[in-house]
Each structure stands twice: as structure tokens, then as C-alpha cells.
Amino acid sequence: MAGKGFSNRAVFITGAGSGIGYEVALAFAREGADIVATDVEQAGLDSLRPEVEKLGVGYRDALLDVSDQEAFETLVGELDAQGKLPDIAVNNAGIGYLTAFLDTTPEQWRRTLDINVLGVAWGSRAFLRLWQARGIAGHLVNIASAASVTPMPNMAAYAASKYAVEGLCEVLQMELAGTPIRVSCVHQ
Figure (tube, rainbow, N blue to C red):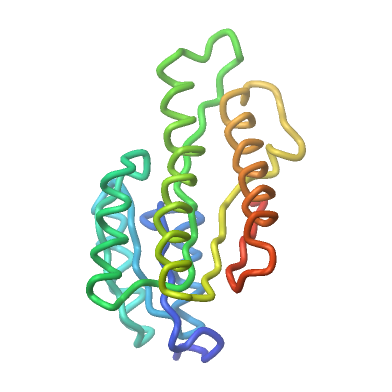
């Protein structure tokens, strides 16, 4: 049976088909939140659906490449148009390569930054614009990493991307001070 801590709330989660995103979706569902789960692969979302639905909360999923700004804004806009704009958004989707700096290819750098940094930026923009326009006291949760605090060898692109997420969170916290919108940066 679901708890009540987040009843009457809806949570949007990127990268919800596996790992941290999957567990975040289940944790919010256990507390009574409706879930909007996104991922680039349907299989994980198909696995998540029955787990969330058996908790008695609403569930919707969608395929989403977070690096595609237009797709991100379209999906969030559709939710808004349907009167189902979540008031909590968890920008969780991320990737990492375990390669030495000189062995990390330009494509690996681009992919890491596109997903880990721009994906967070696009998600933040899509929700913040609508929350501000609608007067919604939303909560933006951006997933950084311990790598942004304690980097390790063979993680140059990943660590750099997570430092960027941390910096973005700090700027958003300053820019949104005095508004009802909160921004959290989580170090997983």
C-alpha cells in the first residue's frame, strides 16, 4: 500500500527505465505520487509500469531522448495541455564512460555532455518556464554525482558533466530565490 507523503503530487522522472531513476519512481509511488516515467528504451518502462500500478497510483510513460530539446519541450507541453503537469521533476538520465582522458573519444565527450548536461538544462527549462507561467510551486531535482565532489581517474567526461550539473543547480537556486520554486542537487 502506498504512503501519503506525496499524494496529490505528480513526479516526472528521466532515465526511469533502470537504476536510480527506476528506484526513484518506485520510492515516490510508494509515497502516493503519480508517476510520469521517461527513458530512451521502452523495456525498462514496461517493467516499471506494473510495479508502480500495483501501488495504486497513476502511471504514464513516454520514450524521451533528453538531449533532444524539442522532444523534451513537446512532451512537457503535452502534459501541461492535458492539465497533468507534474510539480516535481527529477532530471536523472545520465551516462558515463570509464576511459582515460586521452582515450575518451570526441563522440563520447559529446554524448556525455549532451545527455548529462544539456538533458538537465532542457528539462529544467521546460518545467521552469511552465511552472513560473502557471504559478506552480514546483521542485526541480537534478541528479549530480559524487564525481562532482570527488572525481576519480578514467572519468574525465563524466566528472566534468556532473560538475556542470552542480554549477547549474547553484545558479538556478540563486535565480529562483524568493520564488516558490525549489531546486535541489542530489549527489548519488
